Amino acid sequence: MEGYLEIEIVDEVPDDATVVDANNETIRNVTVVQRAIENATTTEQNVTVHVTGEQVLEVEEGLGELPWYSGGRENPSGNYIRKNDRVVAVYLKVLA
Image (cartoon, rainbow, N blue to C red; front, side, top):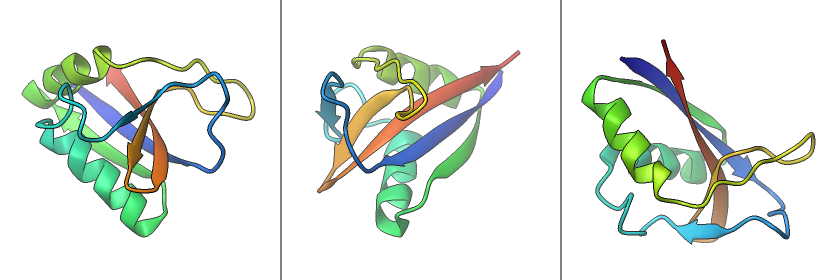
């Protein structure tokens, strides 16, 4: 099993999106998510990380517990997560 974890910098959080903190207990110890968010918020650039095997399951489990935002043309879909003063949209795409 493999997939891609996509982290997108969000400049304006939609009014109806729920934002959770990066220290939320469901993702606090998911290393690949924490590193990707740290990378994106430090560099101010979107990040894509290839994940495989147990990482996919760990990320699915952690993100699955968080609120999901269904975006549209102007806002990305994903789990909206705050790290320091930046918000990112996190999305896991699992490949068949």
